[in-house]
Image (cartoon, rainbow, N blue to C red):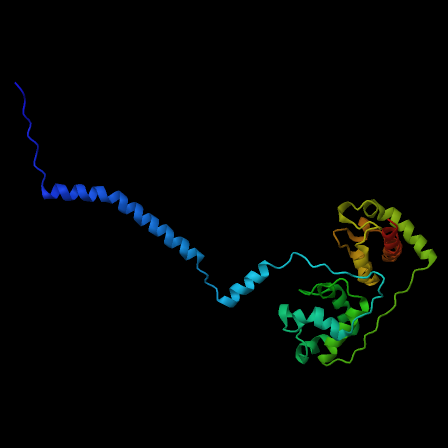
Length: 266
């Protein structure tokens, strides 16, 4: 005898639930696609003004470097104080940035002018507080630095004249003594360059020599550049430390003088 099963009649409610269930997945997919498209368009929208965007594009397409042809045989002509100020110093002194005395600010310069020409020149050479040595331009000559300092100081009320004190050249006897002191106290580092010490043939001496002998004497006696005071010999006299500096500077100058000729020959 065959069993007879009757199907339950479909109600309107059942039909609606089935319809909604079938549409749920496609609707979810469509909403996700729309959201993705909207987010992509939002990221591509340029929020910067047209001129800012144009400037950013120009900066991005700037060449990596500029080729500048310099004639090594052309004699150097020192710039005037005004020229040095315009090209180097005005970046800070023009606005008073980093606490620097603003150009023509007599109140700010007055406090410094009272310290005297020599002190201000020393600060210009070696740097002070946030100002780097030589205003951050190591290629400036001593006279260019002096002229720039005088130009600014005089605009602030001083009556300085850009003059340089010529350093006294050591005698042959002093250089001989300096060589001995160097061999006994300095050679271990400066002959090899260990601990970052400048070898006597290191081109970095060009920048150090520009700082002046007084600066180098102080560095040798008190210790700086990562080296110990008096080469680590507390018993060494200040006078011997100075003649050692004289010897090193003399040797470094000789090496620097030979460098261009050697490069040309090569």
